[in-house]
Image (tube, rainbow, N blue to C red; front, side, top):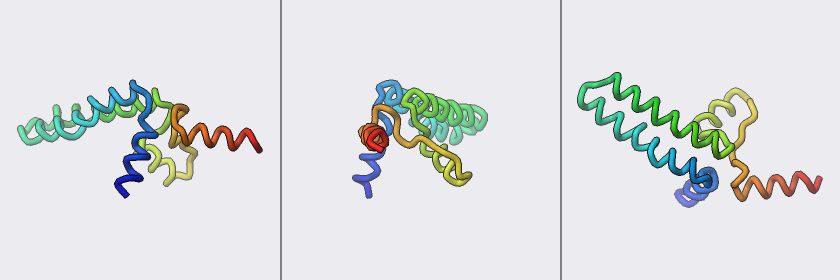
Length: 101
């Protein structure tokens, strides 16, 4: 299960811009926002949480795929989604198999 998660994560985060934005965005979303919550500064915590998530969403826009949470919502609404961006090996396999049809 951990192997599958890591493999999926790596394939969905191949672009250096996406990786950089996640490197900053994930800690800001979770660690920094919790620290401000503990210090009784909820508005700053909310800003950090939202700002960190925006960085991650921007990273996925650069990557050319949807973020995991966006995929979940789109699945629930029966909407199309992009799980793997153009740099992904799975994307290349899907592109080659669809051109053979």
